[in-house]
Length: 336
Image (cartoon, rainbow, N blue to C red; front, side):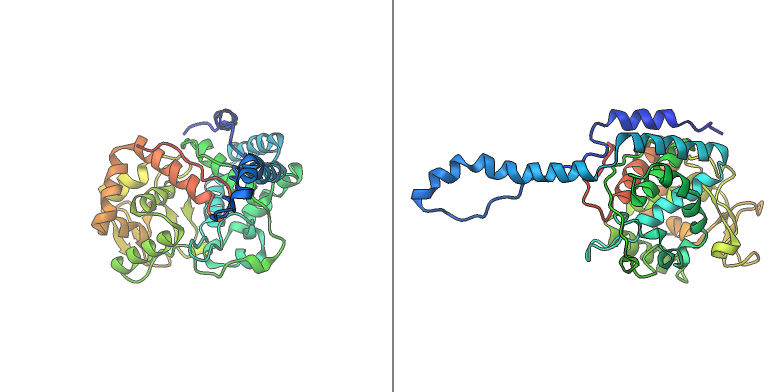
């Protein structure tokens, strides 16, 4: 297993000068033709007319972006937590994922912007079972770095965890503003469900959920690769076991195992799931759906044979996921 270290991620973040700098653009002036007598004055003052809203935007951005010291300090504290308890790392990835994956691009609701997953109303959602412990364990970090919002903290924790467990550097920007109103919690049911009764129905459900957030098939499969980390717990989800024999190391084993092992359906341990020949590993119905659907399977095959491509695509998709629902510039990495 790779020893987690905060240094690579911190260096990466420092190297990105725009890491948590919001980019604002001036509003375009109305498309109307002024009378000739006033046109010259308007043209002369055009620069000022554009600079004023831009300056206001920059002041607002500066006020919202968390201080560099709080970001770096939080990175170090979270990385230390993962180093001391590697099993906690996958839970932080799940927390970041679930705090962001409620986004609806049509209604522009949900996502990571408001940090609502800390409210008991959202923690009570079925897919979030067990995450209250992660929220509680991050409280000392929030208390220490008061100018970092909960919304920024939860997403940053996922970024640090991925990197600390051997994964890629995920782009991230701060500046999210916490809601104080539990009424901002979105309805239960927005996160992906593991079983819709058949492989065809489950694949259709996955496309619906990820499409609602703005992801295509390739991004869907790349994000599913987070199942390389962690395990299912019966008391939380009704499912039991890890997806891979290295649940605290980020790699492409999820895809290679999905393709190369024989998976048999069983409900002996709880809910219906799939087991490998050794009965030590598991897959959810939603995992098996990825290899039953030809359009999804081609990306499983791609990532199984090319771990570098998986790292690149996961970093891009996860960074995009963590920015959903925010007005921050969408972070991006080059994924060729």
